Amino acid sequence: MTAALAPMADATADVVANDGGTTPAAAPAEPAPRPGAMKFRRKYTTVRLTPEQATRQGQVATGAFRHFGGRDAAMAFLNDHDESLGGRPLDLAIASAEGLALVEAAMAARGK
Image 1 (tube, helix red, strand yellow):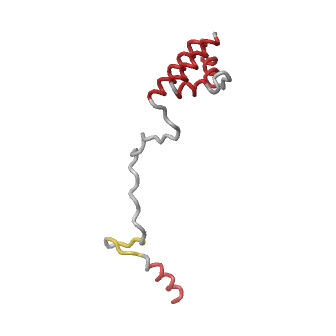
Image 2 (image 1 turned 60 degrees about the vertical axis):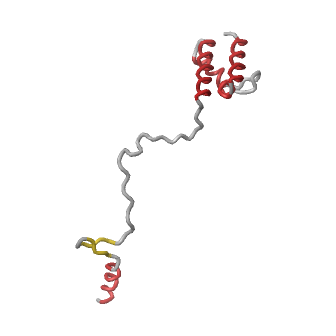
């Protein structure tokens, strides 16, 4: 019977007295996060546009919608690679004011 008690004695060696009761010895736990503490924080994984770039993006998109008279045609023009411009019109317009002017000129040259 002493062999049966030996493991029991080893198990109780890890018990620590706490306020008159016994609790297993453990590392102090980190406090639980408060509910809703990080609810509205977003982590952006993409590059965000500067205010100037966002303005140029809005200008080229508005111009394309007006020029081509519809959403699908405007989006196709802005997002497809254009050989005469040497790139995607939306990217060129966002990159610089000169790029925006080139894209607007290309739209005017295409007609409706």
